[in-house]
Image (tube, rainbow, N blue to C red):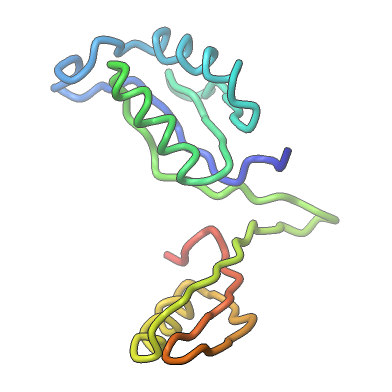
Length: 147
């Protein structure tokens, strides 16, 4: 199993509207639900936050964590989540960033805009191939978008 690449903090909702959208709003409820999820989701990791009442939840990517968030929301859990943070790995005292391989099939007339957009994300073009009026672009892009 590959290690997690993204983490988010799950914190009880402390806004003035807390309790309006869900039935399960305390950190105890959130912890119990995350513990249940850990039994069936081997790619998920949960740590208790030291600074506040909440949990650092790490997973395989945005889709993995967003599916968990949506399942919990539909089950009646109400909580806040932090901005996703990419998990960097250290190898030989060097920080290693996770990358994704991306393949896009695009009409030739949109190819320039796609290349420009991926260049802004610091994507590295690996290969271009053409078939009729379609182009296939293969990129390697960092998971952490530039700020």
